[in-house]
Amino acid sequence: MSTYVYGITARSHPSLPEGMAGVGEPSRPVRILTAGELAAVVSDAPEDLRPKRRDLLAHQNVLAETGAGGCVLPMRFGSVADGDDAVTQVLTERAEHYGERLRELDGKVEYNVKASHVEEAVLHLVMAENTELRTLAEDNRRSGGGSYEDKIRLGEMVAAAVKAKETEDATEVQGLLAPAAAAVSVGPESTGWLLNASFLVARDSAENFLATVEQVRKSHAHLDLRVNGPLPPYSFVEPGPAEPAGSTAGADAGAQ
Image 1 (cartoon, rainbow, N blue to C red):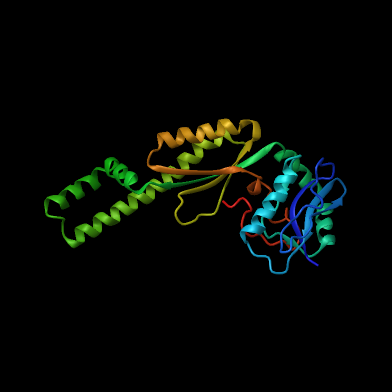
Image 2: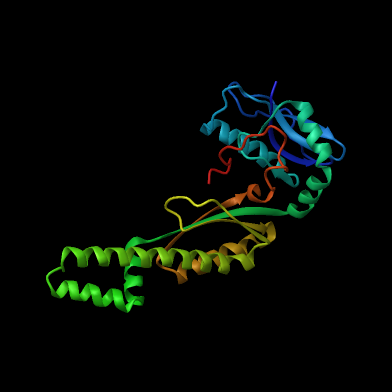
């Protein structure tokens, strides 16, 4: 029987959620596996697990229940090991690593920030900042719209200017938010976003971080900033060797 892993925490954790409902239909009971000073929050793994809303929420609820009483290293939705023995073996082999991560992440949460351009606003901005673009656009207007070649050239120049602005804005926004966080993890590029970054923030500094986001939002009217959090620190667990052997990472339970 495969074992589904929700998260890893200290064996001394005061409120391990043993017996609560986990993923699957019917829901698999959550149980605790221990090895040395560590504990893994697990359940039996459903054979046909898919990232359905009910299972994503079940994964998130187990982590929320565990995290309410202390630090937990969250596994991403879909983390499955070959069995209980495989989980306890990794807890033993990676005990020093997990202990260090639990100490480092204690009292911290993750905020994911995604940024995109407001199309009309950024077009006005790049035109205002680029004399060559303004001149070509004005020449085209005066000549009744310009030739086909002129229109193509203008379109290509505008597209290049917007792309350059995306890179510039991504660097600037990350640089403005980073001082308000303990660490930054840049996510994979995805269509529609010029920035997809997660920030590790101390719980007692969350208000300051969100205030900084709001300042950036007000000073960059051509940007759409979306914030998701607080979340378990998914992006700071260090995947790969930090995950149970045989695990497979799926969608975030945080539904970013």
